[in-house]
Image (spheres, rainbow, N blue to C red):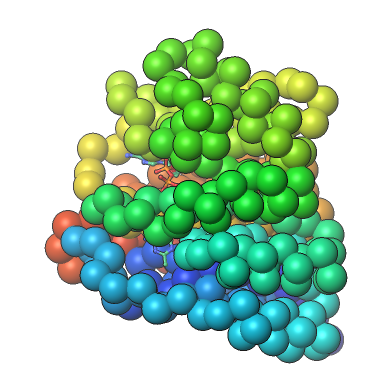
Length: 266
Ligand SMILES: Nc1ncnc2c1ncn2[C@@H]1O[C@H](COP(=O)(O)OP(=O)(O)OP(=O)(O)O)[C@@H](O)[C@H]1O
Ligand SMILES: Cc1ncc(CO)c(N)n1
C-alpha cells in the first residue's frame, strides 16, 4: 500500500487551464500529492483576461467541505480566488470546522489582465477572519498594499508591510516580487520568530506568467503536507517556479500558462 499526502485547494476554475484550481492540481500532481477541490467559482477566462465569473454559493461551499473532509485525510489546505463575502464566510466556517493542519492563504485579488476578483467587503473579512487561521499568507506587491492600506515604495515600506500583515494574524508572511522591477525577482518571507529571509531569482523576461502565484502557493502547500518547514521549502519553490516559467510551452496568446511538467531534480 502507498500512502500519499492529501491536500485540498479552495479556489476557482480557469476555463483556459492555466491558473486557479487548474494550476494548483497540476502542481500537486507534479509534486506527487493527492488533491481534492472545493470550487469557489467558475471563470470564463483565457490568457487575455477574465471574461465572466460564476461564483458558487455558501451552502455549496460548505457541502463540498463536508464531502471532502468526511472522507479524505487532508493534511494541508490552500485558498485561492474567493469572489464575495458570503463565500468567504463559508470558507472560514468550513476551515474552523475541519481545522486542516496547514493552511496557506493566497489572497488573490486581481487576475493578470487586471480583472478585480474580490469585493472590498470580502477583502475586509479575509483580513479580519481568514488571515488569523493561516500558517502562511502569500500576497503579491499590490495585494500587500491593499491589505495594509499603504504603498510599497522601497525596501523599508516592504519590511513594514510584512510586519503589519503578520499583525493581522497570519503566522508567516511571504510577499512575492513578481510584479516588481529590476533584474532580480525577490520574494520576502517573515517567519513567526520575526526573522526575514529573501529569495532571489533571475527575472525572466516573458509575459507568459499565467498562474505563477497559484503555482508557487500550491508547491508550498504540497511540501507543508509532506512535513517540511518553510525554510526548507522556499529555495525549491523558487527553483520550481523559475523552471516552470523558463521552459516555455506555447499555449494560447497573451499571458500564456506555465510548464507544469518540469522537474527541478533533473
Ligand atoms: N518574470 C518572472 N521571473 C521569475 N520569477 C517570477 C517572475 N514573475 C513571477 N515570478 C515568481 O513567481 C512567483 C509568483 O509571483 P507573482 O508576484 O507573480 O505572484 P502573483 O501576482 O500572485 O501571481 P498571479 O499573477 O499568477 O496571481 C514568485 O515566487 C515570483 O518570484
Ligand atoms: C480562477 C483564478 N484563480 C486565480 C487566478 C490568479 O492567477 C486566476 N487568474 N483565475
